[in-house]
Image 1 (cartoon, rainbow, N blue to C red):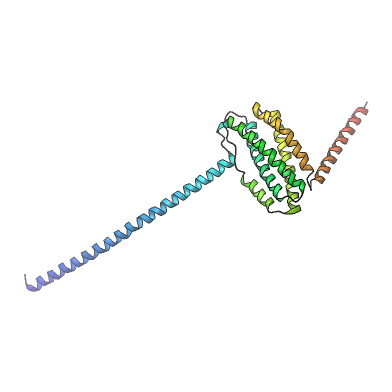
Image 2 (cartoon, rainbow, N blue to C red):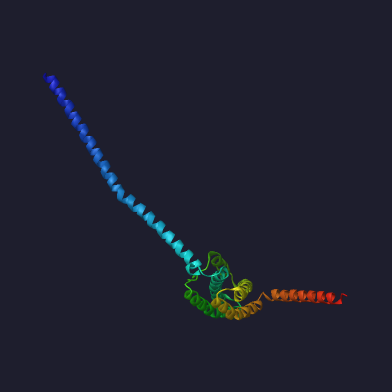
Length: 246
């Protein structure tokens, strides 16, 4: 082999070695970069996963607090189940509204009514909770979103506007509560729940009468009496008409 051929071969070998070394260095840097990114990616993935799990757990806890645990209701009738949940949520609502009225009410009547709601409904709620626990039922401990929204709107009101809105709310709430407890006392299947409904009903009827006398509800009360008298008059007229027939 001539000297020129040897020199050319040496040049080719050196060039090949340089290229191979360059490729090796580039490959090593890429590997380091990839290796350096993995921990961050894993941390981000783990962080997102943990955040998602936390949100799911928080939502699940909120829903459980608002609905209660219903596993112990398997042996209850639909009437008793509905009464338990509705009575629990209604009771919590009245306590919170009562506290608000005692603080924000513009008149003594509203403030006093609020304090009465807190006192009476707290006692009834405690009794109902104890009764539910004895039957393996955990009642809701938080209000539903729609009720919280209503309370937020009420809390933003001041003076006479607050009193009128609160009075209307109490009239509506206690009319529903009286109906709920009357129905359970006569149509409920669980003897303990029926007894609780029957013993609590007189207080709720008293609250309804008090609510009718709150500022702004006097007109509604007079309309109710007018309608009642009108209905009574119609019944008497029909009775007299029927009695005069041959």
